[in-house]
Image 1 (cartoon, rainbow, N blue to C red):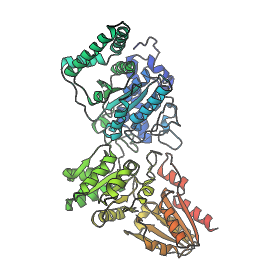
Image 2: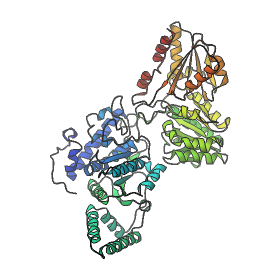
Image 3: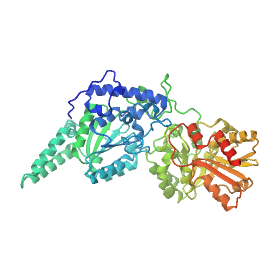
Image 4: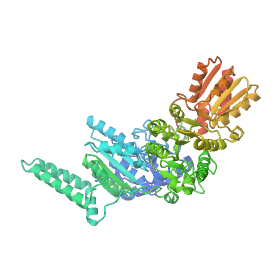
Length: 625
């Protein structure tokens, strides 16, 4: 690839002095190395302050640089999968000055966001979707005679998801300008061995080879009578030689030209292979090896721990991973203890062992711990299969990721009433990860499924109680949903009950569930001090609704239902329908979430949604006027 113009870049590099991404194609390789060092320093310093996904972004610095040197975004459409590895892409596409606002309220999103920049082609907060999206983009380009490329960058475990292979199966049938970059940072595809295989692979990865190949084929095709047969013979000979000496990969069989493997930290090699990929003008898969956490020793040694961190202490450089006591760790430790006595209990995760605190279970019961990769659909049906054999599988999964297995919950679990326990972590507002990760839809989804039971404990003790009941009292599908982070201080004052608890009052009944029950209790006390006598009805079992709840609620002239979940199909909406059917004539209002929630701290989001104690007090006072 020719780069004749050379720009002057200071050493150390001043990123703010560069015109990005335009200047990238003119950098020399030594300058590229300096730039990568500067970017890594910026990543570490920024994520220390903002929190975010560190390891995955440190691993793709050179790859991202090479992509923007060889393609012209946004004319060439780059789709990142999973999108949390796109921080470097943001830095190189005009968002350097705003990078310190990453994942903050009104700042840069932690994932690609088309409304944020035209360089962000597609929202990719969940994994394994990029190839499918790129297939659609590439077909649209072909229809519109657009000569540019659709590039899917797939890494960080996204290739363990089924949609990745569905996309490949579809994309390989086309003749589109579709390029898939497989960023292989934690699992291996067998390498071809031997000097001849290596030599032929190096030739195939060369842009000059591809250009010469096309030129020879075009020349032969225009020679009368003998040209096309000769071209065909050469192609068959080449394919036979390749098959015998190199072999074929899954990607070849699916219709992709396979290039690689390539050192993902060698900019020169990346330049060469990406230039070659462009010359094929058909589906190409480029296999790139990278090191997760590259350039930061703690992250290289423990990439899982540094995958996503809330914030890192600047002095100690250690990640503030969840404290010893949080909802996740309480669940994880209790499940491990239960499994020590009940040999039928199994734990399943979709590549989130540490995120869901199943490391305790895995250490104590390794033969009953299953990590199925980023494959939530498979995980649900896998659990159904185990349950059909008398085991008690517990699928620990983030609320936002459970959405991906919704059909399987209905079709493979609920219809047959299989006893599968869904431990739904990060239920409710999660904060800085934004719209793609807020756990606000699981209640509405699960409440619509027959035979489903759902617990929403307020504190640690109630969480333990619900987990025991889900495993040893209930039958059929049952979910225990709990939030991210620590128990609110006032949660310890709440009654612990598997069904519900009622603190009587006269003027107003506050109904809620989950962690915001602590806020509701504080609001009740504040209102009591102001002369407003409020009752509190805290639900623990939210699906199905207990018939006794209606009897209690009908005694109050005013009811306020606060819900950390989406309004449509939520528990507050269902409760309102029951009141209407029962002929309730009092005042009822429902404060829940409307639509998607952008990134900010959890407390700030609660303020905006009216779910803090002070906001509840203000709302109730206004309604009673």
